[in-house]
Length: 460
Ligand SMILES: Cc1cc2nc3c(=O)[nH]c(=O)nc-3n(C[C@H](O)[C@H](O)[C@H](O)COP(=O)(O)OP(=O)(O)OC[C@H]3O[C@@H](n4cnc5c(N)ncnc54)[C@H](O)[C@@H]3O)c2cc1C
Image (cartoon, rainbow, N blue to C red; front, side, top):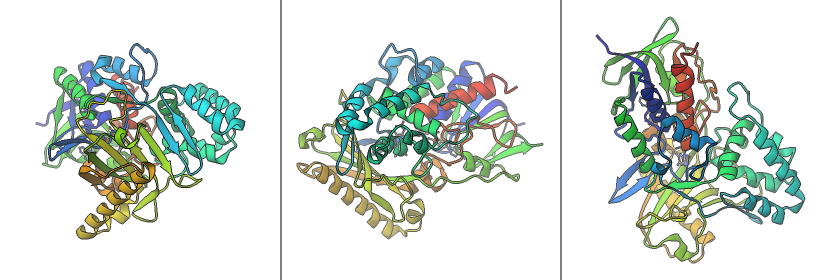
């Protein structure tokens, strides 16, 4: 007879792990099912030639200094009963948005960005301050709001098109499933998490966060099964009742929380389901391990949001990769540098289909071109860069698809979000990326809030 759970969670990414902990804390019989051998999903890690590399982590958003009581990060610590110090956070130094004729620096203190806007776009200072007030007063967590164009709302406050493009660059590349715009609530979440709260890095990288979550899971006795891909979600009378794993095993359950994505989850239900759009935004990333630290060639920022045009094209490129824009991350440049070597990560917007269509030989050639373009960009930004790269790796949209199952390698999932987590099937809920909260902090909060709403509160 198949075992029966209170809740099965599909995926051991940040949202699935957080949901599992929340349910385990309340004595629910839970099992987290992950098709890979390690946790983390889009934010995982791997080892190559003695180098431990993070997959997704540039920076943790929503920084809150120790002792802060309100905001997303303190809420995660409270709801999961994890002590603040466990994440060993080191704040960013400063980050830059670089356009052809303008640069804006921001830090974890919004006053720095206000004064940068004032210096570079004096006529926009008042509008920018009013925009901040609008953002602070907006309830971005409403589960019932429908899509509202952020560019339209922000356009009421910021008239200078270049400033507008610059302000939008980090929120778009760090969290939009929509091309060239985003839902206003999502923009508010990203604006607060990047500019009002700020960035930090856990000492030891993403493994520090994952080990603290895994430790909690172990302590609570929550079952977590790796190499356990879900092949099928079993439904009866329009209600989810269990899953079939890839090895044929059947598990019965009262409820399912799926972090696999909205279209991906619906594909697991064999009955007729509504169809959802697959996201079109994916990335390549070059990871360079350097002999020297970035400061030695003049790189003293944490992140650089680079754009070689007046307009920021946040859209699926027609070519394999869009080299006109990039995020350059220097993990050494947080207040404390815990790395044994110099590291640079360069992320570009890429086209999944183009990468997927390549044969093996061309795929490797194109990966090398991505790497060469990354070197070119570093050299352009820092002419003193001396190319002493001791190890390099490049991942592509195909890698994202292979390791997370997200269709189209869509890092931010489908443009259709299920803010209340419900699906066409009773007791089958979406958490994580396609519920609408992104990034490490956002997806953990999503897992927590969907577990609270649909399992702990009984979904009455
Ligand atoms: C290159 C890159 C850089 C990023 N940088 C940052 C950053 O600096 N800061 C930040 O906060 N965020 C960053 N992110 C985003 C962040 O990683 C994600 O938003 C977040 O991790 C999403 O978590 P999730 O739980 O919603 O989904 P996922 O991480 O996608 O987790 C879903 C899990 O479900 C599993 N799964 C899927 N299908 C099945 C199945 N059928 N059966 C069993 N298991 C299944 C997958 O293997 C995966 O482990 C970055 C992402 C990428 C790719």
